[in-house]
Length: 436
Image (cartoon, rainbow, N blue to C red):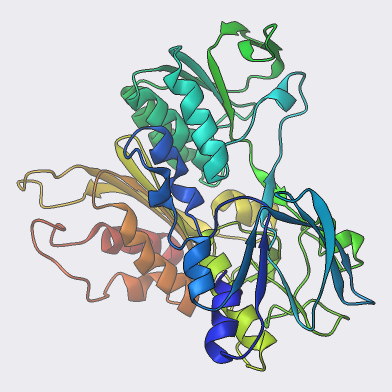
């Protein structure tokens, strides 16, 4: 919808048609765990713009319409209209593909019976099931979504166990930072079974989960949700003959154009982006990138000339009492890519220690050992910690060195920071490692 809106703004006379197989448009998937947890009760609050609002803006918005095939030679889409239960064709001059990502259920018996709450309507069904009763829940996967869902289920008064085959939570962080996240979640009431394989999700006679069998034993459950990640949803595009990149996502250039096919663009979770630190393609599924890429695709599809500059993997989350953030590359990612790095971790306070609400913050800085350039950063801490990652992201983006960051003019007042902000302390520690 970012692409459709951008295209319509540039050319009000253009015929812009958008297809969505579900009933909702322009919604916040990131807000779903909080709706499930009961932070608010109206699912429509997740929707930033309804289908009718898009139509009022001049976009021919067709919901419950599933595109089933793309014929690039004829420049025609095959569309199944769910409400009419019929198949139609729609021609196009310019095409933007924004099919997002699809959940990857673990390859275990019974997983097919568990619907992942990735869309608003799926979240409504999952929440309705919670409200029908039962106080034991299992969350499969200890990543961002799994941990956010676990926190919100605990907040509903449920007994929650998170199971993951990895030996740490949040593999997007280094182990030494992820351990703080686990500690905070356990203090909130979340139980973890790590390094644990799931053998089966056992279903009752009605086809609903009743227990989960693992290498650590069997757990009786009332509810199961899966947060084991998602892969780019590229089936339609691949069947049409569009090229995939090394990540398994659609290959596009910096103008969001699909190679070798004129007038076809792609954006969002289904495409590759250029990682500015790794200097390689990456598929990082975040709404921030998706909206920017969609806008750029819509502009360029209508004759514009705007480039997407790439990504550095900046992300933020709240997990129980801690805010969690990262940018650039971790030590683990550097090792996997064959990049030599050094790092430093410090523990500090989010505010002046005498000011009410002050609490712990851990900051990790990853740097180039020869130049001192900031290559990545991770933050875990209480309220006020996470958005500091934006300073580190700007440093990664622009190539700032740790000794420069250590002297940077950051703000100070007791309600917000100690005299030396934790970022400055971490940068100074990293600079000493580089000098050593």
